[in-house]
Image (cartoon, rainbow over all chains, first blue to last red; front, side, top):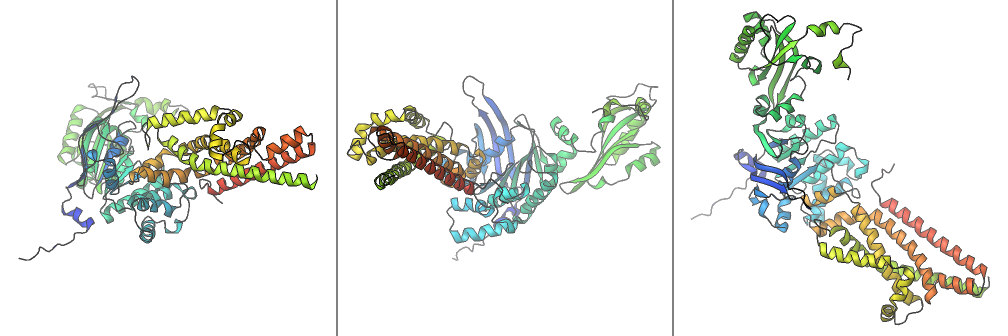
Length: 392
Length: 221
């Protein structure tokens, strides 16, 4: 009998064998804070079921107070759930002792909104800290720190103190520190919320690269749509401590079911009418014979292969329905093309029905937003006249 | 001033320095850990021990609220037990040290509480134990504040050390009282005051400079 031959599987490859295999799982999790001195208990999270597949990026989006911070802190045991289980890899985080938890945390990196770097240590010193804590020997620490700082593009700044670094550079140090102990998952707590848009982009690019090249699983929380769009594969929308909706980013964003998801999407430019036009929109159809100066407003969502179809031209040519563009955008979500067009067409019910059916038959999602009354606007918008919606 | 008086002044200065140095050293040795404990042992904190925290807080407050001159007299039996006598420089060091410990503890506690809680959270997140957090995060980050606190403590101790002269301790205060006041030698009184001013000035300048060097939160250049 021969001994079985063991083939070591590289960590980053083993994850890809079964991409659906969940690395982080929250099962029926609830978190209640028992307030002291008479004040009622506060429920931060309820009925949370969430899993982050190995090697994927899951973004949790929610307003402040939705429970995002609590949720991400449950994953590394900074908070304990009141009910339910939290599992990372093989370990049930929610039932570990404090000392066992400390060992598990070395496998879970975390980055923070305000970076949380030690002011008394240089960039290199900050990155070295988790390794010192883990008892790594000095020579190994030095080599690993240099490698990590190079990875995040901060090699030349190794000896700078945090006060001498920009916000983006500080977050890069934070990322290097989080990766120091070779974690299997990275938790990102609003990591770009304190950064300007350009720096945000570069940090998100870095996180995306780390996810792809190191196969690192990422769980991030944010209140910004742009962050989810930029790097998340899956999204969970958190509202009032519950998950309102979750799934593939492209699916959720292009076919939102929950109202809260729509309000997040509406913050994106091009999806809604500009404020001046929105003020003149009334829901519902136009009573017969009062269509003068009015338009029916449709929102057309282009998904995937149809995103660049010339449907407006087809609408005019094939159905003889003139369509005017009110607002629009074409972009990509999770690498797939996605567009939104808000158009105005003649307001009578028959035209609206014909247009809607025509577009739906071509695989587009059509929503009838209401009726736009432009008559008054065009008059008062004449030179010298002031428009109330422009006062602000 | 006669050579004899100058010799007395030098001796008194050395006595004062010795009393303050010993009191500050032991005071720091005990006060630093005590201060760190007070800052981290409240309910829900890193080394949570609410009862020990409350008891130690009470002891510290009791010592701090006793006027120093009364403390000196009140602990004479203890002083005798430690120093073998209740008069002289080494005896005076005992009440000075007893006063220094809670004073330094409160100053250290304040400096440690100033450290951003986010740093503690980050350290917990990468698996640091409470002891590691204290040694590698809290104390290094609080160090500039601790140094400023110790400077303040040393300056106060120099003042306190002048008071032990009143109850038979040595040092500059004793010299000022016995020669400057009781024997009516204004030049000796002036010399004592000048030496005290110079000492305090030196300590404060040194402390400030050290604290500034340690504080990496400021941009250098």
